[in-house]
Image 1: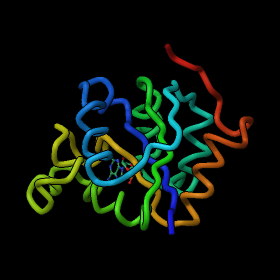
Image 2: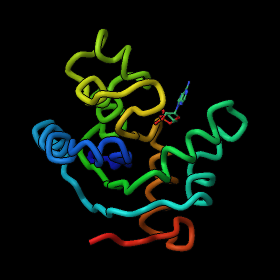
Image 3: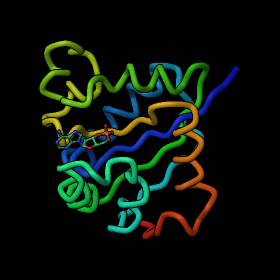
Length: 147
Ligand code: CMP
């Protein structure tokens, strides 16, 4: 049965021109990109999206990072999409990813523990919430459409 997850190419991924490479990996791995939107997130949207990290020491830095440029938000669909997309992107810390998961997307990007190029929902529940945040409840994320 098909499942959906939310993928984001973060500002460092877009700025370093990894978009086409990442999309090729996505399609080669059997995902369908059901919907996508390129947008500039504002601070409030990032605070809401990452609410579970609000008490972390890196929260303010994460807001600066995620508002530093445009992101590409995608609904990815296939069987077992949530777990397969997490496996494909690799560990949070891209420096570790380069060693332990050399073929992962995060290993491919020149990054560190914070700037790790891509996001993936961590569970089917998170995926539903995150997809709604960007694609259904239009009041949740503030959109600035980019051409
Ligand atoms: P992700 O796991 O997708 O969601 C939380 C994000 O916070 C994570 O990606 C990184 O971008 C960032 N992050 C996680 N851990 C750290 C850390 N130790 N220092 C700085 N940023 C982090």
